[in-house]
Length: 242
Length: 272
Image 1: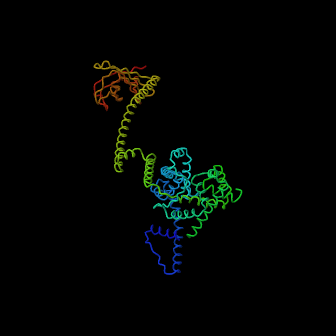
Image 2 (image 1 turned 90 degrees about the horizontal axis):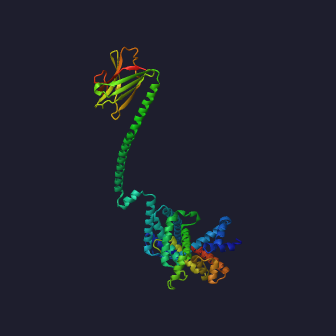
Image 3 (image 1 turned 30 degrees about the horizontal axis):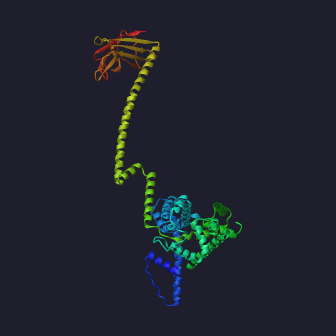
């Protein structure tokens, strides 16, 4: 419910609507009001998601046509997510800044290659960014650079769950961010860690097994169980929202 | 995939990007060739779940990065546009700080100048061609005369007239060879003084006291010997005429019906 009110609050901010304090007169009226609010939010969420996907495809089409404003809009929407992803993988702010710029220049050049039949714009951006970042940490130059960093500068693997939100990013992303953070906190730490190591370090299952002294079968099981649990939690959260 | 559990395990590893290269290729091949709708649905759901992980690590980049990126994009965009679509002249104008109206005016002026230049060049080219054509025409004329001369010499009936210069032009001489078969004649005149302005030499035939105009000729000053071909040249048979002779006089350039100028040459036919 807190989440629903949060979305309603953002929606009011976007459309300049005044905040209203609910006047609770009796329990029946409260249930009725909540029912109406939830119905509106379901409708808003569905419409918002649909237009979100279409708008983003359109953004990429405009970028492919050389529209600089469209790229600026895409940057405003996704720079926070992509920068967080890059920084978590490369573990260095300066490298992350360079890589973010490099990736957006790549998007500028390759926007025409986006195929909506293969997935959403969001998936395309995340895959592209993750692949580039993993390539970076596997590169010789990056490894040499890391060797020169002092122990204080070198960031050990850890996931810093951030509370940052960009003022430009969409309501849909805010909503999803809240959900994923809550869901990740609910899965067992051992399963979460294996998932995060795999996703942010780009290590194969056998490497994870070797490096963290966990049997390969256990790595596979923890990974599968963790992601399946996450999937169920996300589904439940969305259903609760509806 | 041997079973459902194995498929899900491999699928999870795939969407998290943790499969070895060979395993990844095998799984993609499976998805492409063997997977049913259920497999594909599981794959899409797990992929979408994995793709949400980065949301938990959202972190805004430094503010300056946005401007830096957009400046880089703008510079790259302008560079691409200039190198692909903008003509060099426009780039030059831009670099000089000129805007659209100035560019249009300068372009118009350049086009006018170019048009004028082309006109002059075209005129000069015509002149040059005329100059080149003149000797060719002259050579052609001479060749025609020589051919006629040879043709005349082949004729069975020839009338030959030797023209003597008058006393005041004693060095001058001429020949008139008439082809009675083809009714044509070749006139040679040599050593005549240069023609005054608006004047020409006129050839006359005088038969039984009657003067007949045979045509006007204008020799070139730069040549000692000049040849002229007369077509449709009526020849007076000397055997039938009591007295026939030819004369050349100096007349106005348009010619006269009767001789009015001074006599320069004169001669009688000789049957060959």
